[in-house]
Amino acid sequence: MEYLDTYTENHEFVAKMPRDIVHQEALWHDTVHCWLYDEAGNVYFQERSDKHKLYTTASGHVKAGETIKEAFGREIKEEIGYDVPYEKAELIEINKFMMDREEEDGSFFKDRAFANVYACIFKDDFTKLDFLESEVSGIVRMKALEIENLINDKVGKIEGLKLTKNNGSLMTVAVTITKDDFLVNKGENIEEKYGKVLDFIINKSR
Image 1 (tube, rainbow, N blue to C red):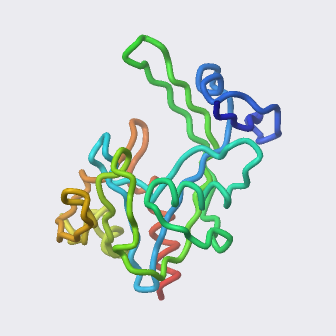
Image 2 (spheres, one colour):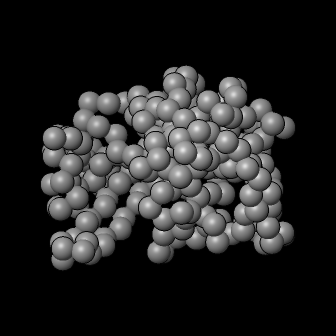
Image 3 (cartoon, helix red, strand yellow):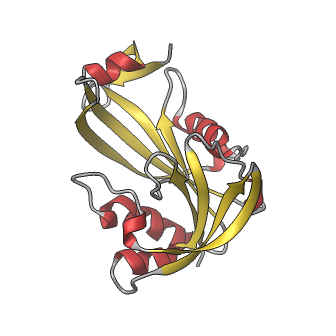
């Protein structure tokens, strides 16, 4: 059973609780949004297998007793198969995230999370990212500046390079990306969701 540390809305520790109880009772907890970028100003998005939309490089819950940076390293390893020097990850922002949804069985999933957004430099070969196909259907590399132009409607599409799998073998293919390809939840907008991350990476690559 997975346990999460729970908090008040002011992020004061309350107790360690089972993950399913955390979401049944809408308890505040930590998550981590992990971003990889390179010195050329590229950012790496995962394409989620369930929604076929572009999201973070990796993301997930911070387990009980785990630091945010430890969770960063674990999620990158679990989802895209890479040992990142997570100690070097830098904080971009912390967002309060609230969402309730009804599941197929009639139960409600209640999310109350402190979303810790961190980024870390990636200096290795793109094809070293051996992703978990049950969660990720590909990794897309794009220029952060070009994505910023796209989400601000300065251009209608951009080009990226997608790392995908064919019969278990990794391969890269060129892809065309529009605003509709990014995962944006109900109540969110694309500029607020990804803007600060893109600004951070653009400034780092100048």
